[in-house]
Amino acid sequence: MSLFRKGTKAYSIFNLKCPRCQEGDLFETGTFSFQKPFDMPKNCPVCGQKYFLEPGFYYGAMFISYIITGWFALIFVGTAILVFGMDWQLAFGLMVATMAVLFVWFFRISRAIWINFNVKYQPGAGTGTGMRDQG
Image (cartoon, rainbow, N blue to C red; front, top):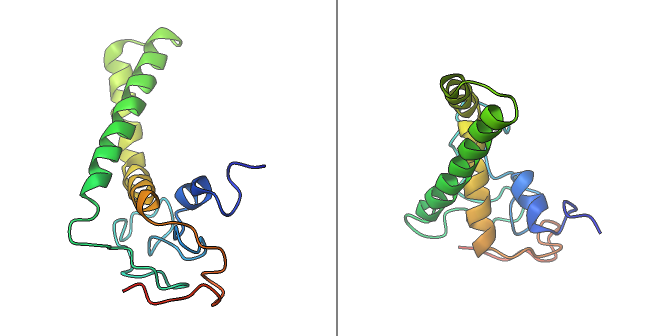
C-alpha cells in the first residue's frame, strides 16, 4: 500500500489536489509558479467543493507554515554546519536564499494540509456519482 496513492491525504497534499475528489487543482497555476502564486479558485473545477469554507478559513494554515519553515530552517542550517562544516553566516545565507525560492511551495503545502484536515475524501466525487452542492 503506497502512502502517496490516490485516496490518501498525502496524495492530495503533495499533488495540491482537491481533498474531496483528488482530481481538481487547489491552485490556478503550477506548483512553483511565481505568476499568481497565491490565487485559488473558489470551488473545485471537478466536484464543486468550496475551497474557502468560511471567512478567514486559512488562518490556521499560517501556523502550519510557521512550523514547516521553522523546522526546515533548523534542519537546513544544522545540517550545513554540523555535517558540511559551513560557517554559520554562509549556512544562514544559503537557507534564506533557499527559502526565498521555496516560499510559494511552503504557502501552498500549508493550505493543502489545512483543507485536508477539514474535508474528507469521497471516492467518485469527481465523476458525478458523489457530486452534490457544497455551498
